[in-house]
Length: 131
Image 1 (tube, rainbow, N blue to C red):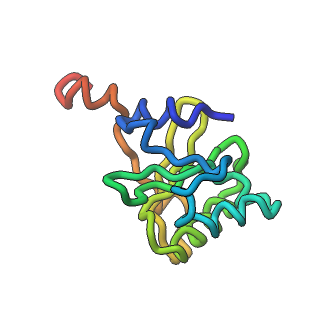
Image 2: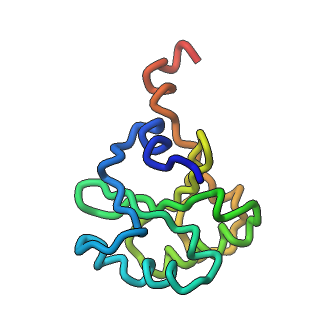
């Protein structure tokens, strides 16, 4: 399993802003459909790790890339499931040392068309003139 909090921090996020789906907590109530789907045994949903909130609002639904595997259809299904919720605009798939971010939508675009390339915290520190 990828160290998702460490990966989020590598990309400039705050690991304390992650709500993990593996434990029951009152703050997870808005995500009950996702936590229940995760517990249902459906392989796609078991990959959901949690949600990264920014200013009290969901920003990125986080997925454990190791649990998800390499099937692009699974990413497409998760994008669509997240879009049906209507809250977090992004889906983030964390693998050891990397975070792939996808726009959440009900479209049929392939994963490459929906992928965004976020800079890492190291990129931000280096600045554009030293890359």
